[in-house]
Length: 337
Image (cartoon, rainbow, N blue to C red; front, side, top):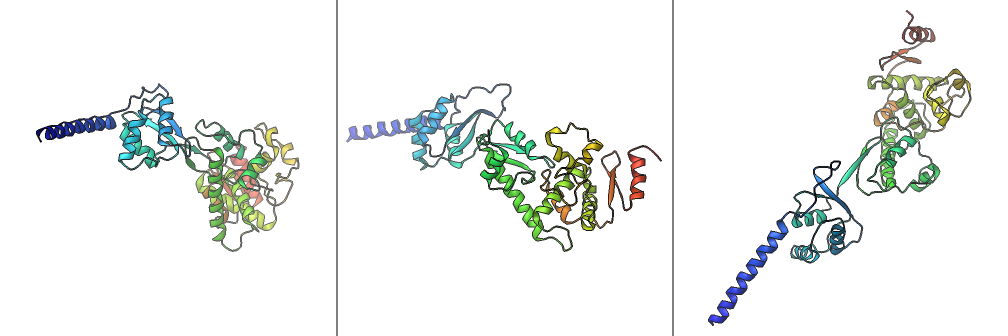
């Protein structure tokens, strides 16, 4: 009887010691090397778990990345917590002070590391694509694709103006196509919302025409407080059949041939986007309008102005008549009284 009791005591203490050692291992910081000078102080190692990976496969990825983690012990920790097959795919950052226990919770909870990319109001698709191409944390699935191929991939009729300017967070390792889809859907929702709530009397036959107008307003506005007045000028011109005569459309039509200096010959050279030589709206948007420009296209200021000129400080002077406009041009552009 005493022998059995002694054996029980030995087993009990042995189990207690083993459990204590296991607990110490589970809560002890992993041996992660210090970050280099250009890495974040909060993150030392980044790794990606592909979809369908097992827990042991995740440990192998970590081992390859230089994190010494015992696969058997980690699997045991997951089984004891009922989380053996619950890890989520994605990109992760292994923080300093990370323990096997906290790492397991991160993988189970899908606490992926994220980056962000910003699409700026007034940018063209080419500018946005260049920004995506510069993101080293994205997977560049559009590399080598033409714009028409990208449009077909996204199910869009065209690309210009189709993406809502905003800052988009993404899981590192995501496809650039995913960002484009999200930005495209965001623009679709925004345009549908303002189109559905549009007031009567606007000179747009379709939501597409309103999007084109919003892109012009975006490019022509220097200060936010002028946006509704800029919208009023172009809406008023469209209503009476007056040519829009807006430089940004001409510049867009020149494409890569534009050297930054808009000349008189450019205004006289006919292209589908030259609103000096052609009446109505250009065939497509010329940039990506933000929400404020979209709203201005549907809610222009109550103004009869048909002209405006830059004052030189970012703001604009608005005029109802050509004579008043010419006086403003002399004052603000030519320095004449």
